[in-house]
Length: 523
Image 1 (tube, rainbow, N blue to C red):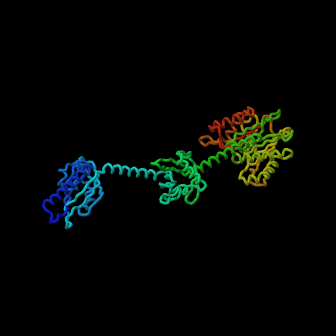
Image 2 (cartoon, rainbow, N blue to C red; image 1 turned 90 degrees about the horizontal axis):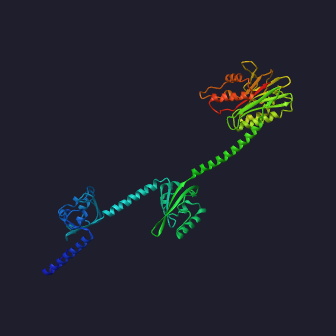
Image 3 (cartoon, one colour; image 1 turned 120 degrees about the vertical axis):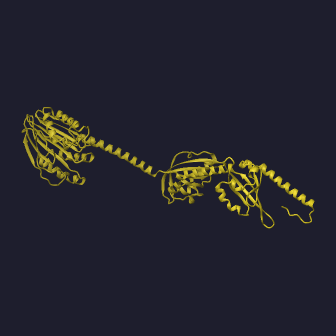
């Protein structure tokens, strides 16, 4: 309050007091009009005055507030936090109070208070004003919560998220971007985007594209999924997939980029492409090998008044490692051969081609079966040894005039010989090691005379070692029994019956190993 001079008359003092009261009244009226709550508290914090705005803010009347301690209207948390103000004589500004409305809902106010003291500095009272900021606080809290959720989404994203302004400067840079490009968020913010993640050769095009969009409002590269090349902090490059979306804020734009590292995907795609190329090459090679292999086998059976011979091959794969052949060495001799290269597919098939070429080259030489096997082993040894393959082979020469059969064996399953009216087969065998084990091998050669109606069955081990679902072998005994059972049929029908019984036994149309049969019958 204004100090009065001792010389002032009572009338003058009254005028001063009236002016002061009138000034305070005008201030309070203006405060009431603005909806602000004016209050006064004694030194202990009890309200001695309250404007009508308290009813609008807290729902209490003036009478319900005056005489009450200010802490009665605060939440428990604010009571604790504001103890320091109760014992302080210092003014406070913009203090946020958390009240409870009369109906129980929370109310936030922004409070300013001034201590009123006498000339000696003694606290006479507090005078202050509270402004209701509940709506603003809710908006601020919602905005903060929204920003937290947005930040959480950005930081937990599996994509690198980069936000750039109209000047090409980075405004935001999430954790995945740190991992992907090697720059920390602190290092990236306010840096030019193209300088951090683009190889030098693409930067000028980026700047031109940005200017084109800002001047025209359109760009063929925005809001699309594009594949580009990114650059790490160390300068290394890698393929990325990104989409960029513009957002207009006022008169300016921001650009949000979502970026994926597609190094793994690109490598996988390249492997798939290479695999498709390899497959196409392999399929082409297989077709060529199939045609070559088909051309090597006899195109038809040989039937004459003296004998009949035919063969059949069922490869386990598209190309087999089995081989059979029969041909006239001259007018008086028929040569027959059956062989099996270890394994199946292209490798063994190629060795069969080589073996056939070597055998056919002996046509003009008067070689016996044992001599042919010796020369064939010597010819193929180095190739077989390097490739880790071996060959089993049985070779026959039939003297048509004398009905004499000469044969030699290189570790192949012995053929079966069945005479008419016999109920058992006998095996034809001769001592000899498989081809490709040793370079110099001596083969035993034997002979036998064939009678009218004699049947000879040559086969590879794929026939006897085929298994049914229970793991039981088809077996030599079953082959012999079936051979006897169907002996009265033609060679083609016997083979057809054997193969049919084999498929029925194994409950399958395909097998793990090549299966080859050849039947010779003397008429």
